[in-house]
Length: 336
Image 1: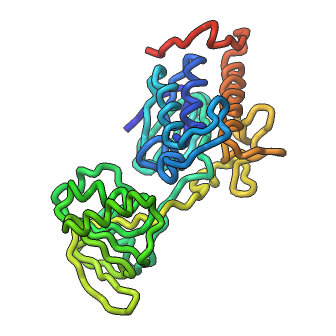
Image 2: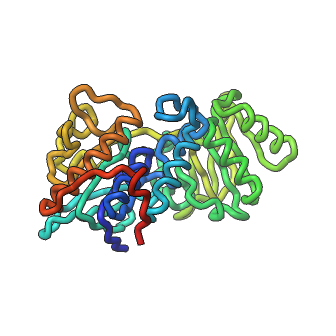
């Protein structure tokens, strides 16, 4: 798939979402790429119910609510997304534009690249199972992109955090059977989610196996069963169509580290007056950007995005006298 846009935003967290608004004021269209299956970055995937206290104008706002508001703020500018895809390569084309190719071979071209990848590409923490890679995308999935895939299927979920419990509850009404396997008798999820899962288990709608781990995978070209080992050493085999280990996400800089941008402390070095990287036309904002006196705050990323995009606009349109106009005067004009 090939997509043409103005600004390629890598990372759909809060800073990436706010960049859509700032680019829209310049009449630029944005396409966002993120490995996670939904916009919002950590705020959506890891702690949507966590209160944030340092967003101007909000004494307190839940992370998930902030994502919803940023999404609504950018909606008039009709951004497009490649979600569940990792940005793999960056190429500068002869005409000066850029092409980013994703892990699913989506090719996105644009005149500006904005890295808003937070702490980097969030990769799933994988269990230590010898033949795990043999069944990836053949019955083993680390992120649930479409729950309907599991309709009338037998599913085993691994983990004891919010994501594992929440998806177990959702899949209880979709899958033919759901078995939750957790290494401890104690869960790290919200008490309400634990209570709901326990009620589903008591009603016979799911199976909960605690003090146990999935330790082996079996199948002929596709997952057919798993081996479960209890903490007392006993083992059992359970037939299944899918195994979904939800053990959290680990931030890594990923392929961006090989793009020649200038890396320090697992972050991208930028000019603190423009937030441009070592490659002209490529900017970095938010936690992924590094410069003297850097403050890793969401509000700092908002500021960096506004500066970076306006600097790039002046570079691409040197013939125009670029005057920043207040939106209280101009309003918000939607892109076509």
